[in-house]
Amino acid sequence: MKIIAYSYSEPLLEPAPAAEIWGQEVDRIYQDLGGRQQLQQLLKDCQTEPVKYLLIQRFEELGDTVQQVCSHLAQLENLGVEIIVQAETEPRNRRNLLQILAELQRSQHSRSIRKGHARNRIKSRIPPGKAPYGYRRGKERYTIDRSAAAAVKDFFDHFLIYGSLRGSVRYLAKKYSKKISVSTGRRWLTNPAYRGDLEYQNSQVISNTHVPIISREEAAQIDRLLRRNRRLSPRSASAPRSLAGLAICAECKSAMTVAKVTSYRKDREYLYLRPINCLSQPKCSGFPYQEILQSTIEGICRDLPAAVAALQMPDISGIKAGIESAIASKQEILEQLPALIESGILDTETAELRSYKIRTEIAELQSKLAQLPPVNLRETAQTVSLPQFWLDLSESERRFYFREFIDRIEIVRENLKVKLQIIFIF
Image (cartoon, rainbow, N blue to C red; front, top):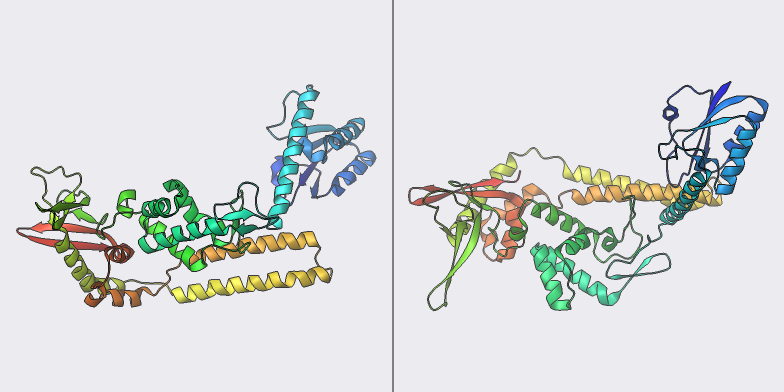
């Protein structure tokens, strides 16, 4: 007596299973991809050759509807074929026919919905649900909601200038009376929809599906700012002072905060760096902020060029050119698909699947491209090592450049003098 196996896979939802899933030797495997041709062949072969066991993963593989599954089960039963279902989710009590039918109906309904979503995904249509703030749902694409999009763009611009998520959230509430949480603001900054892309439930991204609110260059800069701010506490990341989150007392190893002291008549103010959690006795005293700031600038101008020169850096330009070339070649393939459909080499469904795969690959390449440094580090280091560069910068601008290069600043007391140890991020 023969042992055979049958599997059905929907190309839109899942890959074809490997032969090893059956866990035992089988005489023949019948496998369908999107159709039922092999199932019909299986039924014909069972009429001519005796079969003892039929292995399947789920009952629903035997048809697209409950009626088809019941019909095929009846045919196999009349032929004397015993069916073994290997999926653990199948009801163990086979006698409970109502339970089996109810499970089949739920499974078929869920599969039908998933197939509908998959078809929309292949056609790059918008996923179900509410459109992101700043967009409206169109028939197949997101369209710009001009009144709301202005607020979203201003939110992104503020973050690009100051690098402060909490500050950008407060700015949005003050100027546009649009109150959002910090977590919502973080989702806005990373949402592919604002970059002209669509992200689906399977975490795959399709690029260039609708009009973006921010450019690719702005999106890359936002990603870099977010990665940089992860090294800092939330309050330090949004603090206005450039040394916030970077200064550490070398004696007590405590992070330092910027404290403001005013004079009696409040016509002048003084800034100090003070340890936050000092366990020493007596406690470590603070440091004048301007003195530490000036010493930091002098340390960067003195030590940064040598630190960058010692780095073994990859050829960023070559890597970037390679990724851009790969994106261009995949774009050429996309442009050839309509001609292949017209010539009959590809049918529409196959071409759409191919287009979907290529566009997800392009999105992955664009993501890698965005993670590369936008400028040459050696040239930038030469520029910021000039004392004149720092003269006219605001505190927010200094904060931007400090966090690009500095991991932490350890402040060391040497008798009555103060010495800085600047640890760069590379």
